[in-house]
Length: 315
Image (cartoon, rainbow, N blue to C red; front, side, top):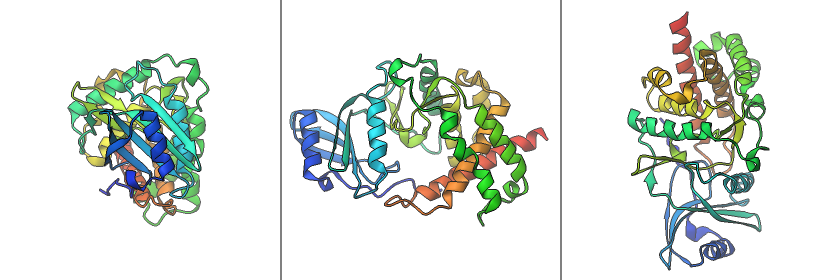
């Protein structure tokens, strides 16, 4: 298993105008900043403490680090400001966007990431939060979010590109079943349609578990409208990344968040996500994100392994 840690800068390495803006948002200067690892951004991710005792979580990035990352922060700022208070998400305190740098300031959540390999009790807590998400009546402020099936259309067609130019590391079973995988992914894309608020990037380092046994969902730049089970199935894929023997089938049978999901949805999801991750993993690494491609390969391998197990059991 490859590390998901990225090469982040720290609070003191931020330009003075960014640190000054954060201090203004918090109405007091930051006197302590503790860097957090995980995720895929070269920017800061700090739990901060101000002179007047206020705690916050600050993330900031600029174009000198990665030209695409500020755009992602801008998207998150817009979405986070519109998320209902009833959801298990951190509150956005404020944001700053100037001189090619973007900073987001959130309430600090007293919590930690789920254990990896995953344990069933923590996974259930996460699925309970995702159930709240799937039950939400999407407010008007979020009704114009992109459609999940539209956003993933190119990604799910990755088998076409793999067919034309196979990676040398392509799993032998996948190589022998390319046409079947292409068909499953194409059908799977149609199952992603829906009107549920979808985070679309759920994994262990985008979740914080509190002492009150609540899973707080963080990092929202990719929010979409789509199938109510997509995020929950993404969590199960993440569990399989860390433990290929994890009993995902029992969880699918027993948790309400999967109630509207059919076996064809699972197979199509796995084929499509495998196409996306395997096709992406062979690309050059983006600036200052050296671990991204290895992470994507791990995800793709896990999706293929799970799908192969499923199809073997039904053949």
